[in-house]
Structure formats: C-alpha cells, structure tokens
Length: 232
Image (cartoon, rainbow, N blue to C red; front, side, top):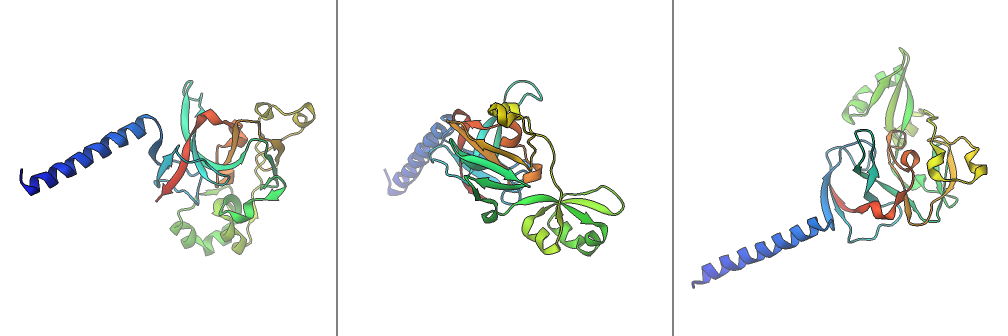
C-alpha cells in the first residue's frame, strides 16, 4: 500500500471515530447545539446566536443553562429553555423593585441586563437612530409616551424611568408557608423565597420580557439539559 493511501485511510479512520463519538454524545444528551429563539436572555444572548450546551460540566450560579420546562399551551409536554442560573437549593431569592438579591446580596449590579423603560416621545426622536441600530423593541402607548426594552446602562445615561412590572406571580407553585402565601408577589417584587432541595431558580437577562422561574417555578435537577459552554 502506498504512503498516500495509508495517510488517506488514517484520515478516514479518524473521521469515522469522531463521527461515532459525536453520535454517542448527542444520543446520550451529553451535549447539543442550539439556536437562540427568543429575546428573554438579551442583551447577553441574542436571537440567532448559536450555543453549545454540555451536560458534562457542573453549572455554577450566573451560568446560562438549558433545561426542560413543562408546556401545556399546545398540549402536554416539555420545551427546551435557555436561561441564567441564579440560585440553587437552599438559596434565598428576594426581588425588590426589580432588583434581585441572592442570600441578601445584590447580584444585578454585576450583570448586563435589560428592563422596560418609559420613553418620552421627544427622547425617542432625539435617539431614534441609536434605538434603530440596536434593534430595540419599542411600543407606543400614547402620542407622548413609548415603552422600550433597553439595556440598563443606556437607560441610566438617558435618565429613563423603569416601567414597574406588576404582573402577579402564581405563588401556589412555590409551596410557601401560610404566612408567605398571604402576600401578593409580582415579577418585580418577589419573595423572599428559599429554593427547595434538588431545584434550580432561573431568570432571563431581559427581566421584564422573560418566562423563567418567576412564572413557572423552580426547575427540578432532573430537567437539566446542560450548561452553555460556548456561544457566538
């Protein structure tokens, strides 16, 4: 056998082995490739971003993870969700006026987040090009006012007011004590809540536009798909 043929056979053998390993990993759900489909993790993960998820790595707080969520809108079943892991079992979550505290510590100040802000029409006119370049979602609610999904650091520079999210939370799914269940929880004012054993608590970075643990409860460990190890 010639030297060139041996090289070609060696390359083909290596590719075949890689193919087998790849298929085994995918079939055993040890890793997967996804495309971001929603705005819930913006500005960190944008629609169209490609991500690699692996179950071989243990997630830490603040990592993005993939998990299965019960979805009954179109029939019983599960859908795959990407969100930021905020807390794990026995951690205490408190959301006060939209700011998240983990075990008493403000964790939002170290993250790049989005919220809904009130945007006066004159401010919209002055910064229209900026908003269009960033492809922000803007909703006109009157002739004088818009609501915009905007990164917090930009909103701070423009001195915009946060649009309080008063959407109520179904507290029964959190299995709180009688004292806690007498309170009214909302998206922006939530808890304190102790994450139960063998569960995660997740939040989207686009805080006012995310379906996460505030809306569907803590995530059981057995619904964990993997940690995001790369995205572009």
